[in-house]
Image (tube, rainbow, N blue to C red):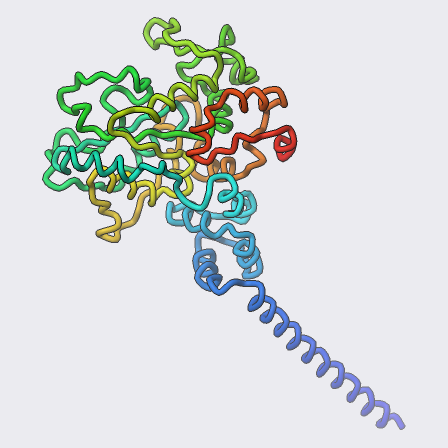
Length: 379
């Protein structure tokens, strides 16, 4: 009898082991089927991108989850820029769908962009062409200059001095278009393609609050502005750097945004307008568009060399101002998330903005101006 009990116990244990093996097999099969169904065909390449040594401590499930969230285009950009990725960073990144909702799926250009490029190339062969950058404060002018400093836009037979790609337009990058002067011996106005940077005014105003440069809100000190940004309806002045006296006046910060951008938008001269957001999320494409518009050759494409991003310099030059948080990563996290767009705006400010902001500019460059108190709740 004891032998029979031992034998029965042995058979029970053997049966349990067999059942566990079957369960393990079915579980593995179920996981495989889940990945096959829920992971798009492109995911193999995307997982390959996401699973290199720059992302420590990520298991396959975490990688798949990141792909499913639609963050892979941003991850690829950051990896190409040499950014070390962590799970915390991946969690903070917006989805590509969020970016598309805010800015579209690619660079937004004026309808006559190609025409303007053609006119410039017709008037200026590559050997005589110059490119200069212009824009309001906090619109990425230094970042774009950094991109072209690190990536060669080649103009055949161009004289070595000065370089064809200039860090600013000859008349000064923050100067109003109406105040341009053609008194620059080495870089003539009619041989310069002005690359004008524009930015979503709702995000732009937030940056101006953090550091206003030469703009002064009424009688409010710079420290007060940084501590508590004034209402958008407060008048602003442009202060002369030498005398510290106001030399230009606008009824509000959005009047300033309108006036400055309208002047370039309506300018009858050589210029193109590029969105800050496109430089942030489509750097390579923007660099190619600008270079080839002016008649140059994008060397990083022709030689298959590595494109160098402006990773630490997306809004300011090194040591320029007090804004030390303008890295590529932080910019993507902040400006790719619509919850941040209306942060700090009151209902009355949003109503004021809708009545003041130039409708044509907002429409052409796909900046949503139909904002309401309900939209602000996303913040």
